[in-house]
Figure (cartoon, rainbow, N blue to C red):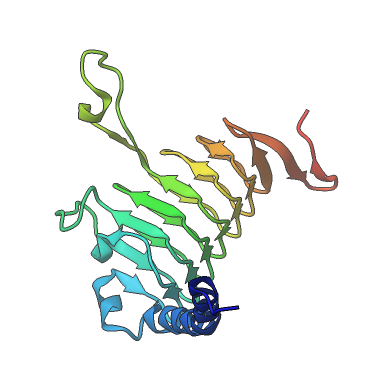
Length: 216
């Protein structure tokens, strides 16, 4: 049987596949951003042992982004401080990510006024955190033309944010809080709680002497 174009293509893929995968792995290692790279000096701070994986998502407003030590930021994570690149910012620090945090692949952190993620916070992939919502009160004007509203966001130490959860403007999350996958959170969440749902509600909380219990 004659050697067909299909066989040639298959054999070529088998030959080149491992090379492509090794090159991509090398590109990810080389492209990783750490505080040893010149670009890290563009950030407000970039702690020792921290890195932003390659390939990154969209990152702008670096001078107002502070990253602590030993923090891992996954690939395709977008972090923005301000509305657009090269904008004059009102605050020196708009997005603060603490030490020993892990930000999951494809997550978005959108800060216009203040987003603070305290130490030892981990997130699943595709988490969305923002401190701004569009206004919609005037029904005669398209929503995108109405003035947005900013409310700061705080995520407490040791908390865990599940895959694809959304943290809305004005949210205050206490320490060691679990946010279930897909939850949509706004308002205040007390320390040592588990929240789930859309809108998120407390499904468990810790009580001294009783442990983790469901709220009555």
